[in-house]
Image (cartoon, rainbow, N blue to C red; front, side):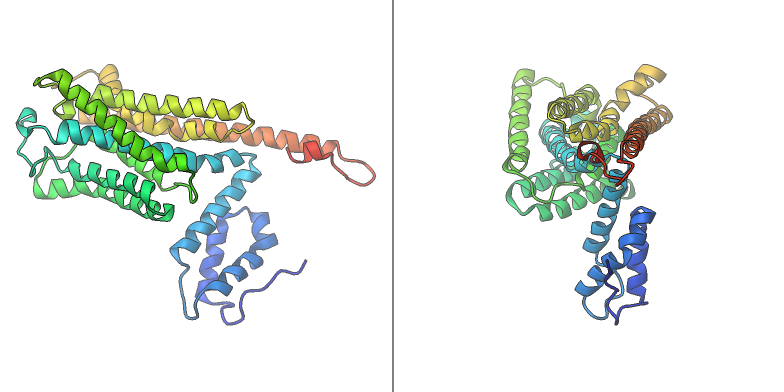
Length: 349
């Protein structure tokens, strides 16, 4: 089969070279077989004079390359797991943002011995309002806009602590911010065409958590419980565990229908779920100093959780790749010695 060559006016141009560099995301044999065709297709669609691939084209190529590599490992379910994990991450952020905004940020800052930031306890209110806007975008606007809004929410989550340090204003503690950043990274893989369930979940989640927050306030009856971030580590650990349990339950249900995407999503969210409990785990391992773990203890625990999550995902991927290679060798061994035909049931394994 003849492969189309890049457009003559773009052949050998810096743009073509940059597209070819992006092709390195694909496996080597796939690049050799279809590289010219892919680059030629992209070059045919760009405006004359363009020197760089558009962000959309770059993400499209990188995502397709990742999916092709995972397919080669027999782990196509991992590629399908990213949108599922992103949906769970967004709704967890909406739940946490709603609760912390209503239960902590709107409370009297003097309970936490802080100077007020307007009507809020800390600049973290901007983070939680930002994620609520992302959730509203997911419900009401095209999903492509939600990805952009999610990227903005992630940047806001990273930027607010830096701004707070520069201007000397209070911010949420790291045991709150770190899992928020991890979940924010996961939301960048939100699906392009979600169903009505995925669209309605953020609004439903925010409403349910707001009702729980009101119930908490009524139960406290003027007490000082849950009025600062220092009183929330246990609830955050419970939120991370609940997210992990729900995704695992969905994964098991899908696995019964021969779909392993949910189990891969559980592995992807293991690290953010663990980070929600980093404060409690640090105190359990290293002890408590002044009402909480030391910064060094929290850093060591956080690093250990991230390494453990990465190792778990790597081990699962390596195991799947080994199983896939074994099946492929078995398929080749079952090929017809005369014509090389392979049984369809095993050839697709």
